Image (cartoon, rainbow over all chains, first blue to last red; front, side):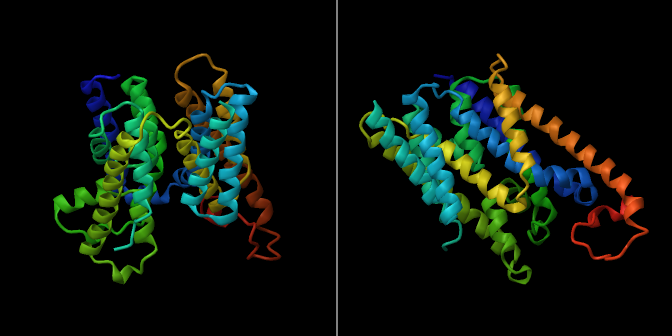
Length: 107
Length: 239
């Protein structure tokens, strides 16, 4: 278990970085608005970052049928539900519920 | 006030995950106050439990929250008066508070309204996290597989982000970077994957720019339909 000092240090780092990203642009609104590179990155980064984070959260999954099949099925369920209903909570709870159920059955 | 109520169940999930990860329940409000950025907060549980080096934590926070840079372009901060209120307003500029203010008519938004929306959002989020942490304590043992909620959250956010542009190459390139990074034998998956993705995006931007430059002179003389929807309208000025 990490020490309290490390946890507070890491949380402070995150606080400073996040606040900087939210606050600094207000000081530079005009130049940021006119930068076509920043606009391109702003339009294309979110989807890619979210794809990478999805893979990251699955990186520890063992590549066996018992490990990968529940994850693959639940991921398909979440994405399918979201494409169908567009309701974030329904998609998240549906996918997670299916995963918990499948892991229980396989285990 | 119903605004931002969707944050409560998500906060609840965060709290349950946090207390099931072995951290003391009171870390939930500390996390929610200090990070206050939903997806990063979920991610932070795993990162911090693995005692990830601070530089890597900073880089991850930067990449995950980079999108917030663009909220400054249209968020009505100018209506909020006083340095303290403005500081809070910038600190609490989350996806949700941005989305709520962005969908309201400009005239309806006073400084007090903007602050009120942001405070309610945070109240729901922190309250949900606290409630979830206590629920997590009450559940006997561990519910196996609950952490899949994080995977589902990112997949849902990816679908939402995709819907904005419906651009296929970018998510495919990101997936390739992520899968490639899985094979790089280092503990820094996120840094490798996001770094590679950024380089690929910059390259794509460069290619697109030079292609536009080259095609611009050919497009101009034959302006049969000037209002062509495929035309590089945004870039006409700098060709």
